[in-house]
Length: 81
Image 1 (tube, helix red, strand yellow):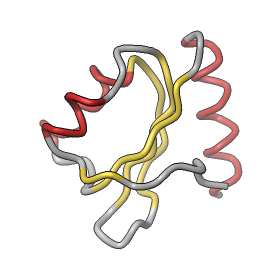
Image 2 (tube, helix red, strand yellow):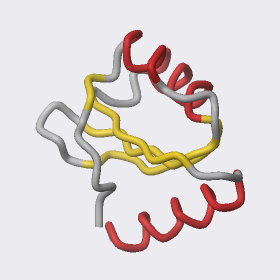
Image 3 (cartoon, one colour):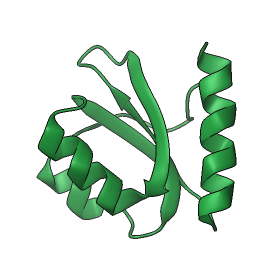
Image 4 (cartoon, helix red, strand yellow):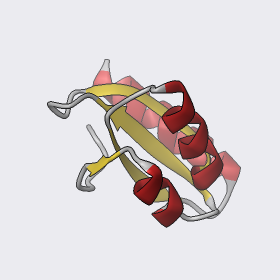
């Protein structure tokens, strides 16, 4: 099951708006197909994804800890398979 958030274009504006907190994020292509699910400090992770061109769109959910983010990302990956 995908994150229940709206897609945003993965650009500098989205990276600037991303919280500097742990969370889970999905990267998608232009049509909204999920390409990857990962976790980490959101702003840092999205800077990297933008620099490497890992996707066209992004959506994320904040968590309180990196461990919660890791567990949520694993759960989302399992549901997408």
